[in-house]
Amino acid sequence: MYGETTGLEPGGKADKSTGGPPVEWDPDWERGPQEGLSGLAVASLVFGVIGGIIFSPLLGIAALVKIKQTGQRGKGLAVAGLVLSTFWLVVLAVVVGVNWHVGNRAEDMVALRVGQCLDLPAAEQGDPFIPGQITTLPCTQPHHAEMAGWVGFGDGRSAYPGATALVQRAKEGCPSVTRNYVLDPLSLPTDVQTRWYVPRDSEWARGSQNITCFLAAEQTPIGRPLREDASIVNPDQLYFLLAIRDCVQLTAGVDELRAAGTPAELRSLAAQTVDACSTTRSKLQGRLWPSAVEPEMLRLVADIEAALPLWQSAARTTSEDDLRSGIQQAQQVSDPDPMPAVRRALKLSTTQGEPLPGQ
Image (cartoon, rainbow, N blue to C red; front, top):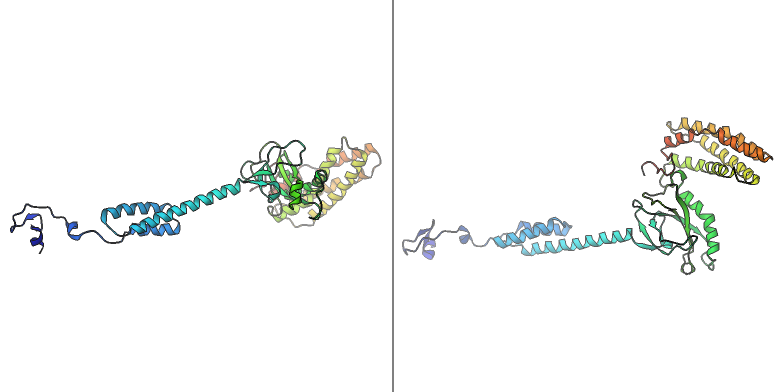
């Protein structure tokens, strides 16, 4: 019996049979260690399994402290939760490190992918061989260049043609590559130019026989993607940009040549302008435009129609004075307002260097 083995009665009174001193009674001493399973230890293991790297270690430590105090079961589960959370922390660190490396790694120019942004190492003026190792960056960070595409050379089995031939091919082909990469040249910053990298003979021998074309800022770093091709613009924007680009490019070229170009150059360019702008007019007239765009588009078409006869007259004249005068008249008759109005209606850039709204 309880009184017979301890000499105590409940309540801490002395056992009358022994006359012993009073001793405080501890209920937990009667029950012994608590042998239930720790809920904190179980929770730590569960969070450790599912990757709860914040809760699992906190619960595991709390479980170990509680188990030490109460004698509950579950120490192994708590330790397992701590081990698993440590494992997930290592995995997270590896993933973050790999992502950083991929976003900021050094690559060969010949290994670049279209749309990658990069910083270029210093190169001597006119050197077609930029040092092979470059650093790629996210396009939202300041950078100096953006990969636009490639120009092929040879059939993959030909001997190395030499830097001079490759550079000539780059001059011919890379402007077309970058023109299709950025369909709207008005969106390009003023100091961004088309550049290229031609493969060295060692790279050529390893199978890298394409010329790398890219857009590069001469001074001010770029802080956004430059890409504005068919994958970026909407169908109306795409149609408009493709319809006007030859006409706009040629009229700008005539303006540059008007003061110093030879009569033969000016006459040829004026004739090309007639063909290009006639095609532009037909394309713009032949499309059903959104109601917000149509009024401004009609004004632009009328403006092109008014200038065409003057371009035609300039292209046919044999007098140099009449040629230059005719070109000047064709340029002056054009109204400067319809083009920006159409661009605003289509949500395109209206000033040089302005990105596509929403980019």
